[in-house]
Structures are given as C-alpha cells and as structure tokens.
Amino acid sequence: MTTHSVEAFRQKNVLLGGEWQENEQGNRITLDSPSSGENIGSVPALNKAEVDKAVEAARGAQKQWQKTPLHERKQLLLRWADKLEENKEAIGTVIMQEVAKKKSSAVDEVVRTADFIRHTAEEGVRINGELLTGDSYNGGPAGKTAQVSRVPLGVVLAIAPFNYPLNLSASKIAPALMTGNSVIFKPATQGSLSGIMMMETLEEAGLPKGLVNVTTGRGSEIGDVLVTHDGIDQISFTGGSGTGISMAEKAGMVPMVLELGGKDPAIVLEDADLDKAAKEITGGAFSYSGQRCTAIKRVLVKEEAADELVAKLKEKVEALSVGKPEDDADITPLINDKGADYLQGLIDDTIADGAEVVTENKRDGRQFSPVLFDHVSTESRIAWEEPFGPVLPVIRVKDEDEAVKIANDSEYGLQASVFTQDINTAHRIADELEVGSVQVNGKTSRGPDHFPFLGVKNSGMGVQGVRYSLLSYTREKVTVINQ
Ligand code: G3H
Image 1 (cartoon, rainbow, N blue to C red):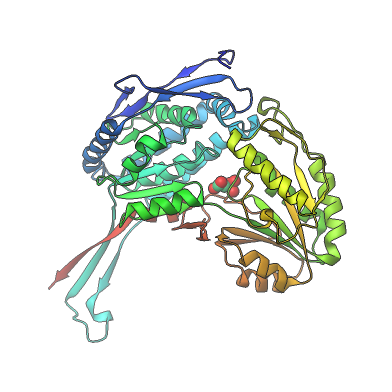
Image 2: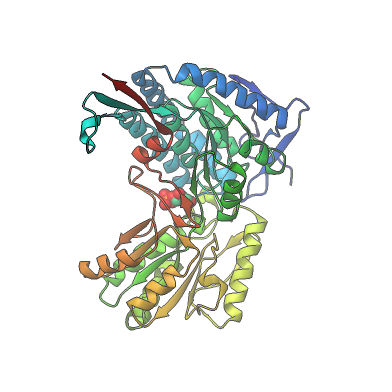
C-alpha cells in the first residue's frame, strides 16, 4: 500500500562527515508501518564507498574529540538529552509508527533515553585511572610507578535493534562519546527514522563534524563491510544470537559488546505471592508484545501452585488490550511477516504437541492475541526457542531441581526470575542459575539503566549499564615512571 496518509512522509538523509547526505545514486529504502502497512518514510541505501567515507570521517574527528575536556563532552550530552526530551512527542510518534510500539511506551522510551544520556554524562566525568607503585609486588622496585589511565578505543560501531530504536542506540552512542570515541551508528532499518531524528537533536546540541556518522542501508550490502572494516575499533551490537555469533566470527580481534537473545524463565514456587507473580509475569512476558530480549519466555511452576497461578495469569492476560499502537493497545502487530509466521509455527507446533491453550488463539496478519499455554512439554520447541511475540508457555515441574535444570538446559543465559517468599531459597536458586541477572520476586528487565546488564552463553558478551558501558569503550593505557 502506498498512501501517505500519515501525518508526514519522512524522507530522511544521513549524517556523513558532518553533512546530511543521500546515496550518490539516489538509492533509498522505503519503510512501511508494521501496523497500518502505509509508507512512512525512506532512508538512503548506502554503498561500500559511503561506508568508507563515514569511517574516515569518524577517524579524523576522534583525534580531536579525545582531547576535548571531559566537562565539555558532558555538556554536549546534557544539551542532547534536553533536546531529545523537548521532542519526545514527535520522536515518540515516529517510534510508534515505525516499530508499532504503543504510543505511551514509545514516548517513555524517549524520556528513558534522555535520562540515560544525563546519567552517562554525570558518571562519565568520574571514570578515572589509578596509580600503582612497584614496591607493592613482592621484591618490586620502590622507584617504579605505573600510571594507569583509561583511554578511548577509537571508532565504535554501534548497531541497534528495532525494538528500542532510540534507547538501545543511545545506550551505545552516549557512553562511547563520553569516553572520547567517535561513532558509526547503524540503526535497524525499521527504526532508522527515529534514530535519524535522534541524530538531528544531537547535531542541534553541537555535535562536532564527523564525530557521529549514520550508515543506513541493506545488511546484505553494508553489514559485512562495517563489521570487517579495518577502521573500526570496537563493535557494540544488540540483536539476535545467530547474527551476533556470526559477527564475532568475522570481527576477529576487535573488542565487542554483544546483547543477544534470551529464553528467560520465571520460576514460581508454591510459597510465592501468586498475585504478585502473575502481575509481574504478565508484564514481563507481554510488554511490547513480547518483542524484548528480556521478556519472560517460559514459566516453570511447581505443580502445587500451578492451577492457581495459571488461573491468575489467564485473568491478567485476557485483560490485555489488542489493537493499534496509536490507541495505546498492549498487544500490537509484530514487526514483520517473517516474525509473525515464525511465531505461528511455534504456536501450531505447541498445540500439536498437546499443550492446553488457555487463552484465545487468534491472528489477523501480524496482529496476534496474547496466548497462554499450560501443560507445555519440554519436548516442544517453545520450551527452548525465542518466540519474540505474545505467547507464554507454562511448564509444570515437580521440584526446584527440575526447574533449575530446565532453566539451565537452554542455549541462552540472559536473566531469570524466581518467585518465593523464602529469601534463602531464592538465593540458593539464584546461585544455581546460569544467567547474567536473577530477579527475585520481580519480572526480568534491563533497568534501571545503571545496573549491570549482561548475558552468558549465547545471550551475549561484555557488560552494559551506565558505568559498565563507559568502561567498555575504554582500555587501560599504562605509563611507567622509573625513578
Ligand atoms: O530487548 C532487549 C532490551 O535490552 C530489553 O530491555 O528489559 O528494558 O525491555 P528492557
């Protein structure tokens, strides 16, 4: 459908070497709304030569930027945060249109991003090195001191996913800039309009020319060019595990931070506050229609609590609204047909495997109703695969050990929730779980954004979260003074 009935069709260009430019042949990618199907804008489809130009500009600008005083870098970030927040309605509306996120969450994402940038600016001025003296080592020389400073890595390649087109871009760009790096920003194609709008606010805030360069384009044409480019010094990627693992194979010795997939379990014991568990699990599983790496993607409940928990979950899941992002519906259309068809396959297989469908199972194109399954077998694909959609399988377990075993048998290790009123039991289970974070009596989620955020196994590499991200864009530089 090619009707431009949305408020404005946004034909955006990209920031390359401090100028807004399009592809030299005029090649563009047109973006459709996942919800209405209408054209909502277009972005340039860059080629290899343009990527080279972006990297060259970033390398040039970084040299000056790393010498820019920290308090000036901080001021740039603070001005950027203010500009973003001033534009929260306009940018939130575009997020809503291009990734079908409900309106209130889209606007919240802009505010969350501005807060993240401010906190990064404040924390960034407190990243310091240390001084070591030689005599603290057994037999070491007293007249030797090592000045260990933290220096930028150089040019950071920030590759963002569609599900948080602003927040998961800025959470790479802001700490990279604060620590003296320059950036090549590759937004997800579906998410690039709001990503570019965010860059417009950064430019208005006073971004030096060439410091951040935006590379929109087809993954098939510029994906490998970016990842294997010898002008890139660090790669920060959020997205699917398959893509992340393949990038790591190609990137060689370039340091990376990877935030990948998850199959986060919620373990519910018989002594849990089941009202709270049902509320947290429903929010954790179904916000943004389940399209979050940290979504709760399976419930492992003790048999004794299962009937009551499922009844409470049913009530909460049935109360979720289904519809358009403009109407602030909880469950909105999925990002694309491929994701929707994959989800349908998982649902069909789960039914064929004999699970009980607890809530209505309905689909209209990319729009699904939220589906709750009970009595799901560990033989079913849905016990292990990421649906990235509004579906939640409940697996009944006989004891804690079985829950931990199923949780850990996964290829993923992002987060897990444990619901129990016994803090000792919570600790015992948390110690056994092979994940980056365990949430006790709460849903799985990344924030608040200064907490460390990491995944183990196929869920990622490296740590994010304000201070941790700042550190990941620096390395030690040692200067030894011999007296
Ligand atoms: O999709 C991956 C995001 O990092 C999840 O963030 O827990 O704030 O939704 P969130």
